[in-house]
Amino acid sequence: MDKRPDKCAHPSCQCDAAPDSRYCSAYCEGQGKTSDIICNCGHTSCGDVRETAGTMA
Ligand SMILES: [Zn+2]
Ligand SMILES: [Zn+2]
Image (cartoon, rainbow, N blue to C red; front, side, top):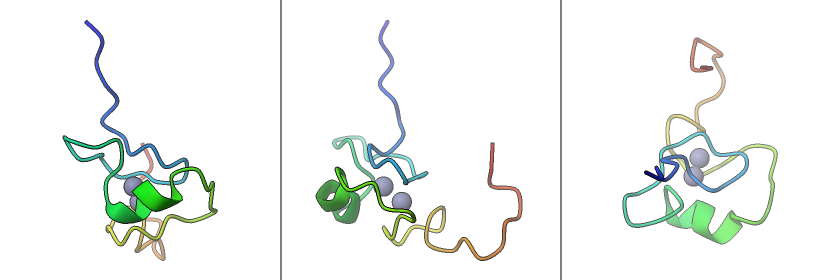
């Protein structure tokens, strides 16, 4: 029972990957091999990191 990771394949991305992709968005798909400091995919999980509320698991 191999469970595929639901995480985006982008190293710096914390979003959930799309069901039919290893990445959450086209951005990460293009930047997948670029270990950027911050993911700019646009999702709230990565985009709005101003407030460090309690998103860290
Ligand atoms: Zn992201
Ligand atoms: Zn992503």
